[in-house]
Length: 342
Length: 250
Image (cartoon, rainbow over all chains, first blue to last red; front, side, top):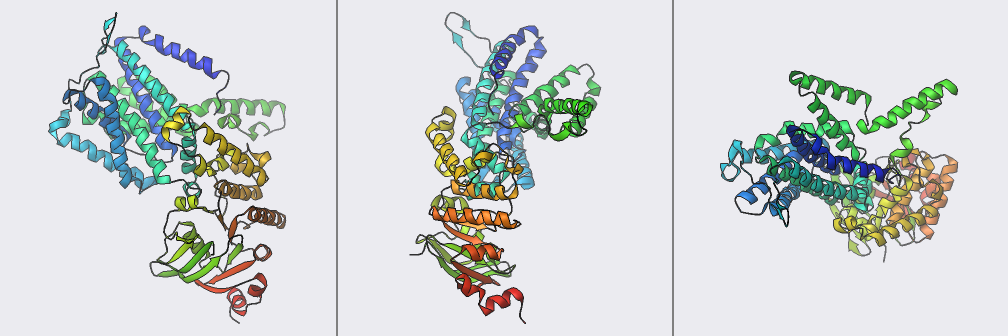
């Protein structure tokens, strides 16, 4: 995709907004923003996986693996949190690499079920082994990172605002890496596997390797998200990373739309913010959420990111029907030309 | 030495004997036809050479080395590339991107070099190779179109372009003429000859007898999983056993 002229100023405006944002928010809203950033990283990394055409149900568990790995390294092995977080991400990536061998012998529905089983096995082992995973209660009192700047003194990362900025920086860098990867040669090959794996194979693509590569990289960033999560909230337990959380990730990704990089991000932001807005109407939240979901499935098959194109399409159709021959405006959806440029 | 040698290849699917002791050899520079009635084992033979099936018994030698049972992507790296029946393309990608994927073998790069932009030379080389192949196949003007928007003839040409991007020495073509009108068939025949004269050996599995007879110097006829006859188009056409297999015993 070629960045348009507006992309840079828009990105800059977004950056300024994100930097200024926490000062206008209440404490619980600052908390919410941190977890939103973490989930943005989770859904974006999930998209890299989805690029090869496989949907897994183990992603959130691998996020948990990153959290457990980082927490244990910091608490038991005495690692600095700065080192423990990337190591936690590597734990998730390593687990994904090991899982690649059995899982990528399957594809489609079987892969989905296989990944679910693998995820539950990992999650149940956290519940079962009290040492070192802490059983059902998980790990508590996970330390937050420490940093002392010369002239400023120690930074209080247990406070929401400093941790928000830390998360913002790490998530932004991660998103940039994921975006570059998707638009590189490797992303093209992964996309090719999605469309026609046998054809890709016939011109020399080792499809197993590329599927595994997408899985490992996606899991690395999921693990990093998990590490960011646990060092702020101070706990990691098996129920945080259960199937319900995984289903939410799937919903965010699908409602947002998988056809573009921004899709899953739009999905998680819109749905989480709506969820947060209806906090007052606690009992009604599932109902409202459900209605939005059903509406999105019915009217926006391309996801929320397809919405501007659809609106343009409707407008064009109306204008066309008024002035020109009937049916002229419905010739092509307006987002068609912009959907794939190179 | 023959470029490809199929030696006593047998392929069994459970109780079904799809190929039974098939042997033939293809010389470099040939266009070889592989024909036979429905169910004769042509497609099985084709997929076995391409690395999509492993032979139950027997061996396949390419440039003197065994490639039996090796994976399709590994065969592609050696220079054995196949095309597909129907229009198997990356439908949602542009014509240019389709061929760019085909350049995988010369353009693949590691994660870090891709992220840091160190694969620039390879990328540019792949892009120039893509342009070259598109011009060669007469698709230059359509490079921005999506594959799914192309007419049938151009889709088939694109399928060959994707395969050519991988610089094959041996190109396996699976029914490239199916469903084409006479004009498209004519055009595809010219393209096939052009590919051959660029130094690519071709094995053609095809039902369209006119195309096969017009293109191939030598034809291998399969029936019930065995080689029924081999020879020039004229020899095959006048072979009684071939006539019987196609028209049924009288």
